Image: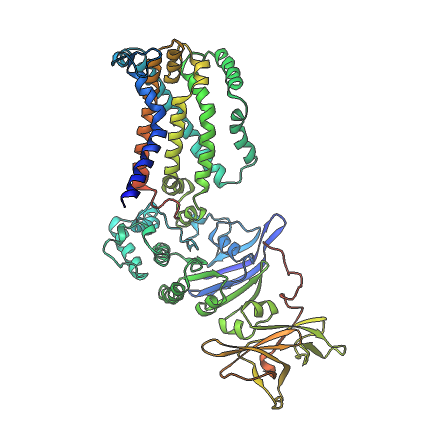
Amino acid sequence: MEVRVENLSKNYGAVQALRDVNLSFVDGGLTAILGPSGCGKTTLLRCIAGFLEPTSGAIYFGDENVVGLPPQARGTAMVFQNYALWPHMSIFDNVAYGLRLQKLPKDEIRKRVIDALNMVEMMVAPDILERKPTALSGGQQQRVALARALVVRPKVLLLDEPLSNLDAKVRQRLRVELRRLQRQVGITTIYVTHDQEEALSMADQVVVMDCGEVRQVGTPEQIYRNPTTAFVAEFLGVTNVLAGTLTPDGKAVVAAGTRIPLPADVPASSDHYTVVFKADAAYILQDQPTPQDAVAFTGELVEVFFVGSTYRHYVKAGKEMLLVDSPSRVAGPSVNVVVPRAELKVYPGAPLGHDVEPTCSVG
Amino acid sequence: MKRARIVRIILVVLISFIIFGPLSSLVIWSVAEKWYWPHLLPQQVGLFYWGKVFQGRMMQALQVGVLIACVVTVLSLIMTVPLGYVLARFRVPFKAAVLLIFLLPQAFPQLPVFANATVYLYRANLGGKVPGVILIHMVGALVYAVWTMTAVFKSIPASLEEAAINLGASRIRTFWNISLPLAMPGIIASALLIFLYSLDEFTGTLLVGSPFVLTLPVFMYNASQGYELPVASITALLLMVPGIILLLVLERYLKAEYLSSFGRI
């Protein structure tokens, strides 16, 4: 089922939770909606499920505009952050609920419930069907919740931060299984999360949202390698975010005491710029000359941490603290942090983390 | 080991004394056929008054009281379960005002409120009748009921209902299948409170019902007014019985069915 959202807006009084959102979700694929809390991602999901009525705009399931349809008639299935299993019903009754509503014959219900529980690998004990959800761990509860959603063969599967309540190890494992399951059933899936690693690792398409607006849409690789705005870069956890100012001649930006020529596609329209690069894209040189197509920041080595796979170097350059990952320990104190031009991104506008006004005030 | 055991026994005895000490005088009075100052214990002990009580109007008073309490409980629940659900789940205009209105009769001293209500009930030809007493009990019962019901439904996460709606259940079906069963422990607890309140209610019953509708508390009052302390004591002991039975039943029921899951969702 192809799902499209056109010019969708949702206002709560004066607060605009969604502003003119246009999206098309990968047919049969997994689209992750990524953003900080209050960015509108959950509002968008609830609009698609039908729990919220958008203020304006359209939501298409195939060719049908489902705005105005009650949630019961939309054929979506939702998985909640708190699992939302019914504690007074057995596992079997929980999973069978949607099928009983469809008035299917008993034998078929039983068969489909067991199939679904098998699919999420929850047929672990002979008495599992009779158990109450509270007898299960969080991860197991979420598997059952997933079975409850999949068993009705929904047109669209909606996942609202399904792994956020689980501890790290279970989360890692369920990520893999969720992705495998999603591929197996091939249901168009919309996955809301604030965890960039989750979004990047699981999705066919990532939508980054902020302030009720879509900031960037693309494959995980596109989003990670070429963030188009400073917000996306920062939100994806790029380790070095520097504040830069335009030089008087308008041809370069100065950040951490170093002159960085303005890339051709960045306009000289702003006084403040954001310069970002990844810790593993930079390297440290001591006395060697800087290569042609690279920029060097001069600073002092403050600290080196061994973090397992790499040594993380903390270099103080001007007022900024630069992070550089390198496979070997470098001795200080005076060092040059070298970043290839291609790895250095410059965006108009001051970085968000440097005492600037937030771009929006959505809760 | 031994010392700890002795300390524990002393503690149990002490606590038992604090709880049952005051009650013991009721038990003694209930079997005292002759007890004059300065004797420490009754001079003559027997079941004369017990026999008298069970023959007399007291059993009738108990029946009337239980009947009234049942009707009050059922009516209160019928009215407040849906109201509590609506107040907890939907945006209701003047929600605070609605809740406050139910609280209002309790904000003033009971006597003037009930005395005024009595005047109106007599005008409506309900004075001295069971329906009148039921109405005056509802004034107090609804306060407990509305507030506890609203809290009970609020404690159920909305996502549990949304999950059912999402799978195709109507709002009403969701209420029957999900919300109501989950609220059941709270509803039962609230029913118990209402029942006991009604059974023990005195002021309103005396004002509205007397002398035609007689419940146990009023009966006890009359008995002690006539210095029939043994009868009053027996009545007091009997008044405790429904409460104890209901609490025991409730505890069993709640433990078995719900307590394990309630509060862990």
